[in-house]
Amino acid sequence: MIDETAEEIAEMRTHSSSAVAVKAARALEDLLDDEFPSVEEYVRALERNSSALRRASPSHASLVTTQHEIVDAVGDDDVETVAEAKERTQAAIDAVVERVETGKHEAATAVAEELADGMTLLTHDYSTTVLEAIETAAEGGAYLDVYVTEGRPRYMGRRTARRLAEIDRVTPTLIVDGASGHYMSEVDEVLLGMDCIVDGHLYNRVGTYPLAAVASDADVPVVVAGSSAKLVDEGGFRFENDYRTPTEVLLEPPEGFDVENPAYDATPVDLLDRVVTDAGVRQF
Image (cartoon, rainbow, N blue to C red):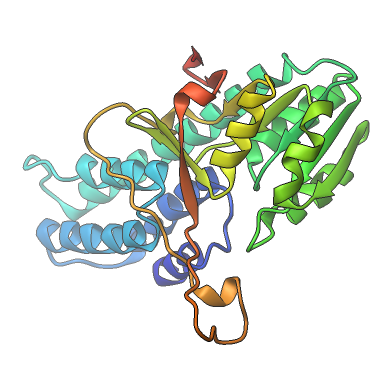
C-alpha cells in the first residue's frame, strides 16, 4: 500500500493536500503488520518508506512535516522494543490525522460563519476545506453563487463544480481560468484553499497568483482557508515546485517550441485579505 500511495500522490490522483497528508500517514500503518528483528531495522524501514512518500510530492508542506513528525516520534534512543516502536508510530499517526482533519474542519467552520446569504464567490482548484465551508454555510440557510475556474491543465475545478452542484442552495458556474477578470466585478469574495504558506508566499495550484492579482486590482478580498499544519513560518521545509509532464498540456509532440507545466505558483501574502485556520485568522 505504501508504494501504491506514493504513486497515487505523485500522479495527483488525491487532489486535496490535507487528504494527501492523511493518506500518507495511514499508509505507514502497513509497517505495523510486518516483522522486524530489531528496533533499528524497524526504524530504518519507517524512515525509508516515509522518505518515499515525501519524495512523491515534496511541494506538500503538510505531507512533509507530518511525515517527519511520525518518524521523529520513534527515533529516540529510549525505544527498547519493536512493539514499543510500533505503538509510538500508531500514536503519532493518529495524532497527525486528528490534527489535520480537525484543523481543516475548524477552518471551514470559521469561514462558513462569514459567508452571508446572497454572496457570490469565486474559487480555484479543488479544496476540501473550501467545499466544506460552502456546504456548511448553505446548510445554515445561505444561498450562494460560486464561480469555479477549470484549473487547467488537469481541470480539477470541474470536480469542484460537480461537487458544488450537489449542494442545495449553491449555484456553481464553471469558467475557464482566463475569464476570472471578466467575472470579477460580480464577485464578493475569492475563496481559496492552500497547499502551504512559506516565507511570505502562498503556494497553491498554478493560476492562483494572477487570480489574486486581478482580485486585488478590483478590490475584491481574497480569503484563504486550511489547516494550520500548512503554515510554515521558518525552517524545516523548503517548497519545491512540481513540473508536470508536457502531455497534460499538449498531447502531440511540440515542434519548434517548448512546453512548461508547473503545478504551483507563489502568491505574495500581501495580495491576500486574510488566512483562516484552526489557529485563528491572520490579516494581511
